[in-house]
Image (cartoon, rainbow, N blue to C red; front, side, top):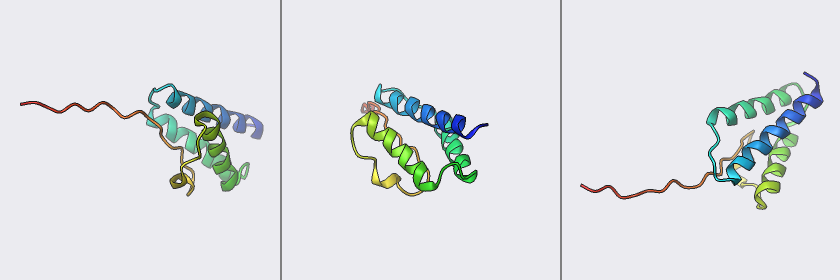
Length: 93
C-alpha cells in the first residue's frame, strides 16, 4: 500500500467515525479498533510520528464537533467516542 493511500484511508475513516457520532449514531468498536490499528501501523512504518497521528485525530475531532479535543485522549493513539447517552428508565416492580 502506498503511503498516500494509507494516509487517505486514515483520514476517510476518521471523518466517517466522527460524522457518524455527530449524526447521533453509534460506531462499532471494531471500526474504532481497526482505524486505531491503521494509525498504529502508519506510525510503525514511520509514515507518521505519534505526534502527527495524534494531531490528525484531534484535527478531525475539532472540525466535526467544533470543540477542543479531549485532553484525556492525548496519551497514545485513541479515537474518542462521542455517543449520546442512552435513555435510562427506572424499573418498576
